[in-house]
Image 1 (tube, rainbow, N blue to C red):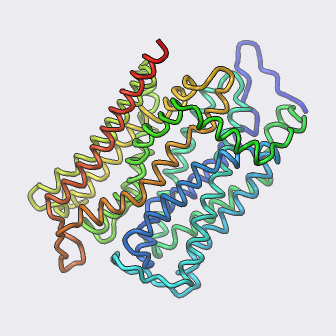
Image 2 (image 1 turned 135 degrees about the vertical axis):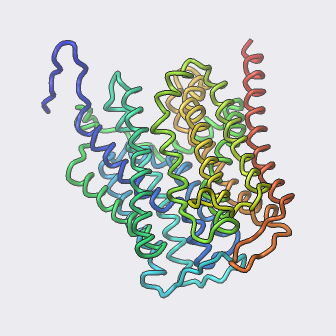
Image 3 (image 1 turned 60 degrees about the vertical axis):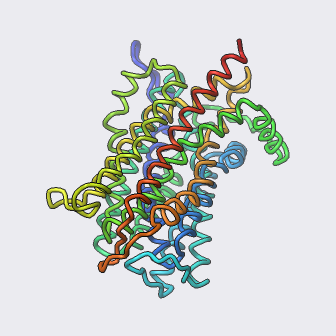
Length: 460
């Protein structure tokens, strides 16, 4: 293996596997976000009813993506990142194909409105459920492989390396949403899965043709000892047996409970109460746009803020972001009133909500890993950081069903069905739903702050 020697006074270049890993991540994220904003609406239009779409999207798909890296990361270390990524993208390409199958080849029709009744048949349900599970499995393999490649190849410049990685994620998110918007407008909503499948296929060939396993490229060719599944599970119990760590995972999951509603409750709210054909891909594009535009500014301005304080600030922001949706509920003309003839007021405030959630994410997400590292016993930082995604998994597991109930069971209570098919929510019921969401975020922030005070007293 040859290596490029840096000239004096210059930093060594990142190796090729660093860049191909980031390129692969761009296509994987483009594939995922091409369809993420519409999954609950697509499943609802296929006849999965009021609650199954959110359960499948969050409690199955999202939960698998964020929980399984505990196991898939260990397997990827044993079998190599390249092999693991090839398997992952085969799973993802087949999964996205299965998601579109009922409409493309199965004779299913997308209803223009969402019904509370479950009318889907088994010929539609089986490929959809298989696709949801396979997206979760494939995504759970990609995550540790790409992040692990950045970790192994960035050397002393890990901060820069992960900054590039995080930026690529959001660029991929923007690309996926934009391309999906074009094709779903040209064809129908099922076209988003064709976009996702194409991106997964491109990622497969990038890995097959260009990607080099980082261990091989960096000269670490020693065979890794295999870890039996029992050892992996024992490590899981070892981490979760640490009471203060498990307590933090629980209190921090409130942040991700609220974040999860961007892809569950918010699409349902807009589709059922604001406009019949919402551009949720464009509306949720506010999240990556804010992160790309303000990431460096927030990091430079608030980077010295203590991690727990930054996490609390981010959680307060994400909680308060829910309350601004009360404005169109009580405004003249209601949520469907047009703003400058461009967008309904309710949709505009959903965009502002997504943007505020992104600011909360900038304060909280990256600092979460730093704080978890400080909680880990000396010498076990890597083991504990492997479980940093558990708050996201817990937030998704609970967030899907709870978000569906908050909308269908609370916000829609006493709603009036309009001639155009939309619902006019009772202002009191709508207020109750948004206030509950805000309260969950604020209680999560307060519990994290209280937890940190308790932890410092214990250490003292």
